[in-house]
Length: 68
Image (tube, rainbow, N blue to C red):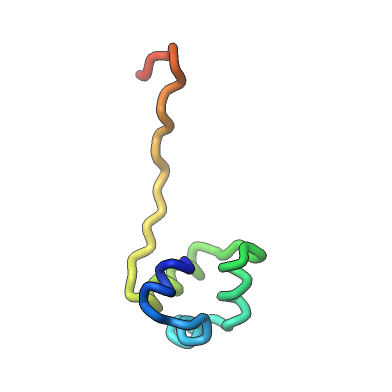
């Protein structure tokens, strides 16, 4: 999230204003103090004109095992 924000030359305050979230909340999320909900992540993505993409990917099989 920090990289995405900085790549757009946005301050935390500017991002907060774009997505309607308090700057302190943006700071807490970036520092790993707060675990945001999917809804908050969606607002942040929209504020950066991005899509939120969350996915579950299969792990590589363990050596010596067969995959189904």
